[in-house]
Amino acid sequence: MQKSLFGLFTAVLCGICVLCSIQAFQKKRYGLALLFLLNAVTNLVNSIHAVYGVLF
Image 1 (cartoon, helix red, strand yellow):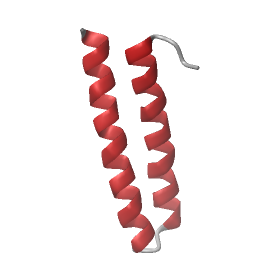
Image 2 (cartoon, helix red, strand yellow):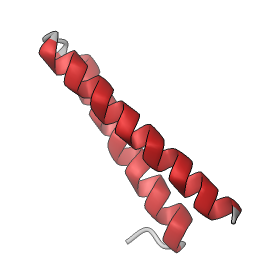
Image 3 (cartoon, rainbow, N blue to C red):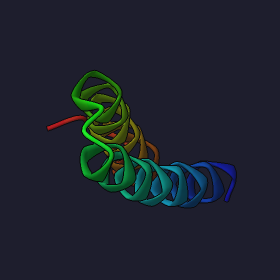
Image 4 (cartoon, one colour):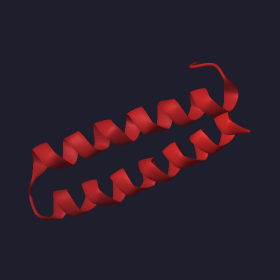
């Protein structure tokens, strides 16, 4: 139960990071946008690991 809640929380954070990166790309802040996209990928990997228990 705790793992699935953590997976859901990190998936929500992944969505927030994608939205923030879109805003940063629109304002031509490419470094910040890439940082948000890297964080989104990390959150996605963490959510997969929390739900399924394996990385790949």
